[in-house]
Every structure is written in C-alpha cells, then in structure tokens.
Length: 160
Image (cartoon, rainbow, N blue to C red; front, side):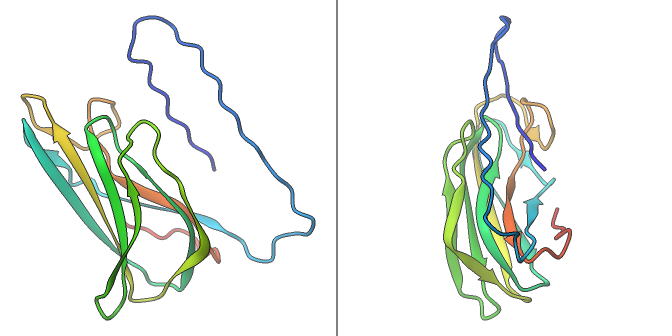
C-alpha cells in the first residue's frame, strides 16, 4: 500500500515528480510486515487558538514498530508519539514539526510493544482562522495521524 498527497495551492498547473526506490533481498522475508495507522476524528480547533489533540491507542498484540510518521494539514505545528508500558512509564519515540514534509523515523532496532502497552500521540495546531476547524479530508480541514510499519503481521490494528 502506498499513499501520496500533493496540494497545488495556485491557479497555475504545477508539474510534479516523485521517485520510489525499491530494493530486492537476496532471500525471501521470514516475517511479514504490515502497516499500522492511528488517528482521531475528534478534532475541533477553536478560532485564533493553539490546540493540542491527544489520542491513546491500546495495543493487544506483541509487535515490533519498524517506523513511524505523521500526517496533518497546514495548521499542524507538532506531532509527537510515545509508548506507555503496562506500568505507566512513557518513552517518547517520535516528533515532527513539518506538515508539508513529515519526518519518517526508521527505528534502528524495532520498538517492542506488547499487549497492554499504549501508543499515545499528540498533534498541536495553530488555527489563525476566524472559524472553528474540524476533522476532514480537505486541505481546509485538519487531520491527526501516526502510522508506519510493524511486524509480525497480525492484520488491522484499529484505533480511530
């Protein structure tokens, strides 16, 4: 699965070019990976205000996080994520302050997340508009996602 967003905020046509490098392995993979994606639809940004939205996603399987990235729109100023273990200790694993070119963090060693742990993420926005902004797919709306690759594949890990 691959997804790409591109926004041309002008009236003029804009030519774009994207590259994808695929690398092959000498031997087949021994463990299948999958994509996780966590979001919240509970976004309500008051006018002329800075607001942080937080969502916690309980993990029900033992998995290894291989990467993490984020997605929000132009009002997004900071996305962070942390892993909270079953005892309540939090460890920050991700931070990004770019809405237009978000950081993709590839973990040198997979981050082990076990049943009972939580991935908690935060998106901070600056709404300079005179109206409330809510969740939506338009560039004039907002979103708050963290996503990446994990293993072993267990299927959909829902949290929205």
